[in-house]
Length: 139
Image (cartoon, rainbow, N blue to C red):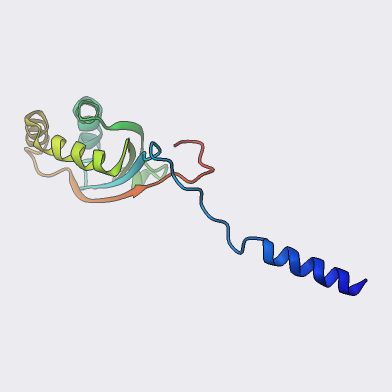
């Protein structure tokens, strides 16, 4: 009986995968997300939010960027410094093209210049591109 259990255990161990493999993406499943965190100069968050609300979001959409959401921290002090948002793109290449076109857009250049007549709004930007996991509800 022990011999049968050992054989059965050995057979199971050799047929079970050692580590779970992530499913391969299909050719059409290339959507990527970009997480951006902006750190505003002191006293500039209201102007930064206004620039996004009144101008930048429309320009993002014009250049093929899908807006997922925008957030400020709950903490009052941090909410005066940090703005976080997520964009989606069909692919990393599409994201690169959208950003290049956005940066070159004369409307963006004008909005940026006008909104920063009293100094820059943003002191630092962190960005990271993300792939959804196979169990993510949003892809």
